[in-house]
Length: 388
Ligand SMILES: Cc1ncc(COP(=O)(O)O)c(C=O)c1O
Image 1 (tube, helix red, strand yellow):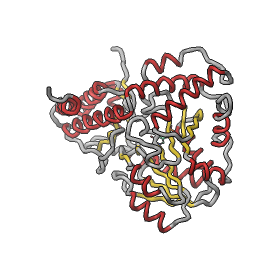
Image 2 (image 1 turned 45 degrees about the vertical axis):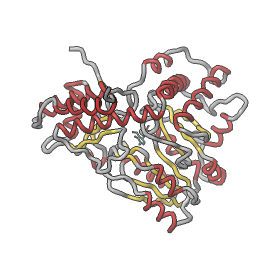
Image 3 (image 1 turned 120 degrees about the horizontal axis):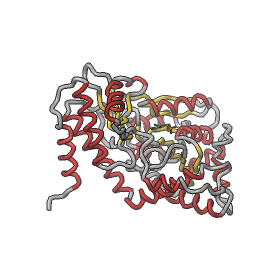
Image 4 (image 1 turned 60 degrees about the vertical axis):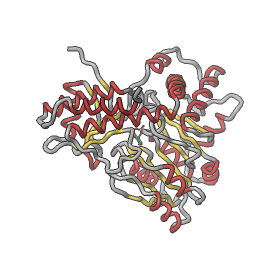
């Protein structure tokens, strides 16, 4: 039988055909007016998607490159920073900070909960020499989404900058970079920005630029100042050869997202998450996060007793062609994660849920087949069709 695959991981994610097609166009040279026009257009689109007027810099890298850039550009060795580490990606910021010689304090909170803005506010009152607070917007490893708005209020007015990893949030979840006082917003192309992997972006606030000017850590490829200087020149460019095809793709993807409208895109993700939640609960499964507020990017589900999360992931892939993700780190084997972040509509989610139902039945979990799909359909109609 023909094998058709459905990519339902929280990144990389499927891309619209318009984004694919434009990447097949002939390569243009990156020191030409044609590229400059394209580049500026893409950056302007990104600014609108991120709701920022700050400088937006892009790098040929996966998201982690921009995370590293945020550390290397904004700080000096020994600077005190607080990292909210409630999952694998929060921990990554702490690891990068230590590699660069920062004095990293980890705020560890349970992986199934969101960070408490009050804890961060208290820390900043007690340690006023703190130079940075690092937060993961959407913690892809757990499905939990942090309240960046509340954390922004806690950090605003202190001497620290707020650095937010919104690699799996931007484009999918409410994110108001400037209004929420995010000083360095980090994101990547391969999730809700509906572009292949390989293009990372950072939005840098005036408060962060002050730190950049004072910072003494070394940065070369990810140097923010160099990237800003080139972008603000008479013919905006990147310092190094950019991923021209990805820039073309991202430019089209930004058009598609902006045509949908950011509030509409955020609502679409909320609907898909609510449908997925209802479905897995109807299948007799439990969601991993206790704190489900804002958790609309990834649905993390506890594996049912006797069946490993990895078995579900492998079976769905091998037998039904649906690719979802397993648990990472301490959640390995304990959870599986369905991504609905990016270019997804309701029927994509139905395909994943149908494959999940068949997988669970085949692996011996007892529940009413079809109950998950029925629950998802009910929620979908309730949330999207007002009674006439
Ligand atoms: C929240 C978050 N941060 C960081 C990363 C790492 O990004 P990349 O793999 O693009 O380097 C990911 C990727 O899954 C992520 O979801």
